[in-house]
Length: 525
Image (tube, rainbow, N blue to C red; front, side):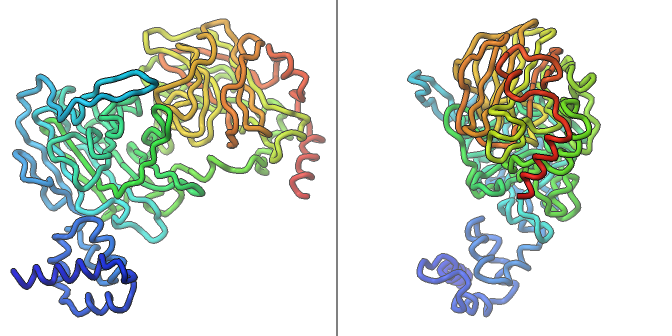
């Protein structure tokens, strides 16, 4: 045993030596002389960062890491009622009789907008238990070319009560075995009972997120980086379809999910799940073939129209501009918001928000003004009927594609919207909007305009401009409207005169083939 400790010490020195490059021949020789069996044994005692550095140091570790044992799950400490068989079949069988009351680690006071607020950190129930993967998900087995960390969980049995949620997500290797995912240590968890997401950097606060899931469903969780930026993203899938990403910004500052995340699963009561870390094919196809997850490259695409868009505009003119439901890919979605004649939208009677987006982007110019003689791009939305209930409201604005099917506009990254319930404008913020204008209701016409030259978004109400909402945002925006609980609205892209008169004078005439041909000529210069 002393010999093993000495070898482990030598290995750590080789891995972490600050003056030695990871791929140096000295390190390679040091590790190459060790027997394969000894390396395998030692790797079982290394934490995630040590394993990563070992992988960089010695290619032999790559083959060792392919062993399923290194991707298995286990509690960080012995826990009553939690068993893991074959490394990936997890059974929670803890006593869940004590469901009353909450436990917490500490009471912390924070200040937001100058207001003191008390928070209970580390909220949990008596029966909460959590298991964590031995390896970070970004190193999980996957085909060559796949640049995301990802895993999936099949729900075999769920806890018997809404008071005992099951959560699936990511967290640090050091996550507490008695805290649910999303309650502490930078973890993020998607919850079965209501589809909410819990995020630890907001002290376990929960937010409306996606559909709830149940027995027979397969929930996936991934970690990747947005192409062209340094923004880290945690996203979730349900039965092979993207349902959304963890909140980009909740209050007034974006949150960057830069951590060495491990797969993390917790349950408040008896449950059974099966985990797939890539040892068999995923339901979420991009995790199998290496395609860009979430089509993230489209979010900051150039403003130049595609050939398909140009052809459609040439053929249909303004009729090319219509709304379409934002639905789950590769799945039957019974809660989509149906669209009549491309412009009239009926939202379903459902607590979870749904949204629609224009088929084509609202703008095409690469330099801002000039093409189609427009200084700004604009559309209007007339509210016909409103939904019922305290949490029923509408959001009108702009967003990139893809966008979460289950969020109001303005909640996710690269979106801005004017909300009906409080008159606030939400810009990339899941919870806090800024005061902007009056609330709105049936009969009101809300307009949304965008100056691509300055990246300015503004709104109008019954033909009166309310002022600039945000400036300096340059994205390929689509007209986007969200609501919940049976709202009804009609969109206008210029098929009828706008209530906001300047929009009628700013080139919002019907588009014709001659103008499109001029645009094509400019693109070819």
